[in-house]
Length: 251
Image (cartoon, rainbow, N blue to C red; front, side, top):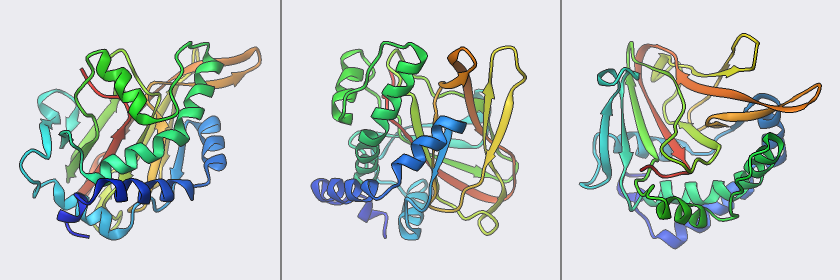
């Protein structure tokens, strides 16, 4: 797949991505999210799609990205990322719209368990309309690029009042060939307990779904809320690209 192919006919792209999302074992993913706050979706993207997206970072059409962030300037770590502009490339828009309907029921179950009144509509367009009505109008899907010695500090992707509680990261590079190190890391902070860290092994094309800020954990007296953060460990060598799919927009 070429970079140009990322900008295909929108309706066709939507159909393709909804079909691909429908083949995912969402019951297994939901259970993994319930138990550990993350779920791997193996080979969500193929090799050609990963290569085209990674190439887009340095060979984008004018207007593809709305901003570039150099992490060390802000104390976020080392490395850089770029937020896409609207309209999103069809691959990115199609993937965002196709995954959301499967994640919204999980998000609603989580909010019920945590005693949060917010509920999410069945379709992503309706949720984005809610964000835009509140002034959150800037798109948040992004491409990240890391080189040797780069890393991403533990953080949460919160951009305004409206937050969808799950997000997706897709590894576009091949561990052991394109880079070494650079593991995806999650931490979970439970009340009155030391934080727990988890490294999520990924291959090129794998996606990981994870909690943006909180997730419910079943305790002896019922569910309670734990704080989640995510980051990337230091790269030992090479270059690593990732596509981030965040479902809420930013102020």
